[in-house]
Image 1: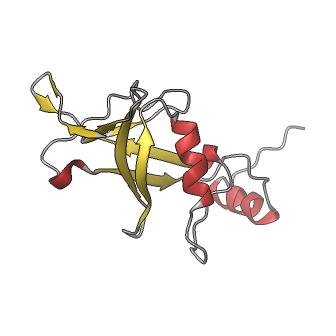
Image 2: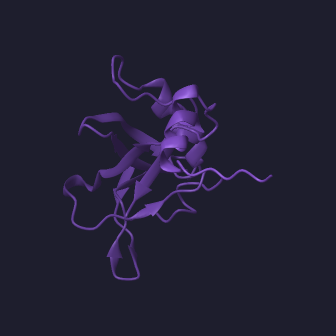
Length: 137
């Protein structure tokens, strides 16, 4: 294994490890809403974002108030951009600025899917927001 830093467009690329087969590895960690880092490890550059999300869900800490149910409940943010599920790490152009040791931290946002059923309470709230009613005779 060799460690290298690639220069690209004036930015230092993430610390990568090249395996004998030529596969590039990138060291990542994922920071959740309360500041805890999870799933710290080395990942293949050819890995898709959806596969990363599956691993994050598998390693999600027990007992948290907010827990993702599926990969669609998670958003991975790197350098201010939300990463797309169908893209690989290489496609997402994961680069690093002045981070020590070249470890990349991605932020994980849990946003539960919008397929929630309306409850009686939410209907009552809607009526409070729009108390006006019209009757046509």
